[in-house]
Length: 185
Image 1 (tube, rainbow, N blue to C red):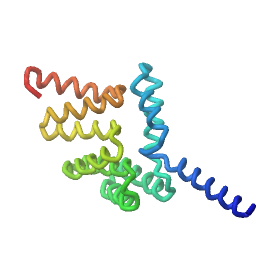
Image 2: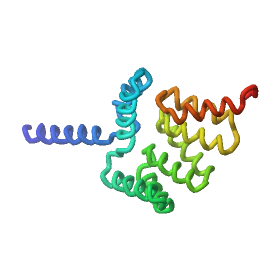
Image 3: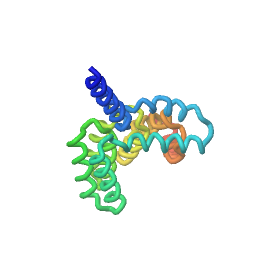
């Protein structure tokens, strides 16, 4: 009996550790962080909260996937987009429910001009994490390039509703509204 209890304790501990380790879009801390992000008026605090959110999103819970993510990010930063795309695609194949892998591949696809591929990936990001303000900002950029101001405006507004502390998105929104002043968008 004592041996069974010890075994159950170990299994329970492993379950708890693995559920904590798999920080990502389904991490329970995110609800509170998003509430704090929308409520705070302090820009420094907002940046800190945003960093924590990104850190949670970036961790898959798998050492292998996290290493592939780091490699993909390095390749993307170095302009090795084909290699980065391969890393992010491998992650997606291994864990299709990991939203940030889709987001990073969407970014790579955007950078190489594959707007259709980027749109498909952003759609998947937003299915998995509807509060992904980065994906909404990227979606706005895609629609802006495609000369779809109404859709761009909507995407930028959604991004700012989730994270009102994105000055570059706020500027894009202001420019877009100014450029289409008097037009129905």
